[in-house]
Amino acid sequence: MHPRPVALAIAAALAVGVTLSALAEGEDLLGAFTIRSEDDRLGGLSAVEITEGGRGFAALSDRGMLFRGRITRDGTGRVTALSLAEPEILMARGGGRGARGARDSEGLAIAPDGQVFISYEGDHRVTRRNEQGETILPAAPGFRDLEANGSLESLAVDGAGTLYTLPEVSQGPTIRVFRYIGGAWDESWSIPRDGRFRPVGADFDPSGRFYLLERDFSLFRGFASQIRRFEPTPGGLTGGGVVWRSSHGTHSNLEGLSLWRDGQGRLIASMVSDDNFSPLLPTTLVEVVLE
Image 1 (cartoon, rainbow, N blue to C red):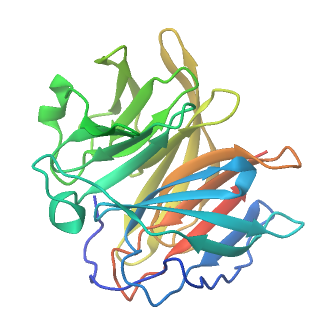
Image 2 (cartoon, rainbow, N blue to C red):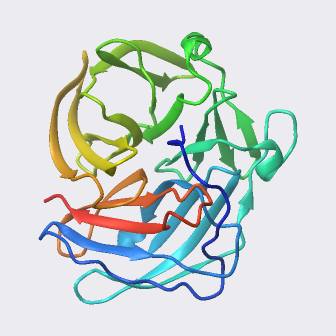
């Protein structure tokens, strides 16, 4: 779901140069980097995956494009360079591609075996991409009840290959958790809502704990973000304590979440900001140290 009002139309990067500038903040901030380029296809980033110990990069545009690239870091772990390959253009249910057919691609998860999963708003669905192509997973019965502009923003996969997806907009005090196990969806789990914050990204850390990135938006104060941590148990997700939070106006529209450990053993949370293709919002890669 895209906060309104927003102006549409701006750009960021492709395989050419990417300009990165760091922003100063608290001690937990590893880096916040503005991404600039003349190529207008990379924007509206809604999900991110950091791989290869911080050197691999994948980001999902909400206009049906998947970008992959390489990250160069300095001795402190901060990004010093980012290069991107030609984007992979996603396929919609009806066969259309890219912005015209596969729009509202919001969630991204890469399984241990390399398979790529993508969740969509509007036409609520989750797809699988591998060497055989792209297929649509069976729909959960509860997908029918989701709002068109507030559905499957968050997507994560655990070490066993189980998919987790959550809607951005929920009614009542809880958020539904959809889990895809053995070819079918389980809808029996839920987690408590936290005030005005709404889910926009999710991931598992290397220890198997579940993290949820949530966003609050105020027309006058801007965006605030937080990360909650949960422990998966046979009966559901427990815990839910806030492990990181930014004040309104500190960062832009952060979406997508990737958890990984660097060479120093630190647990890093990487997020990207969705500029909604607007000249009023930046495209940034924000990384914070959680442990």
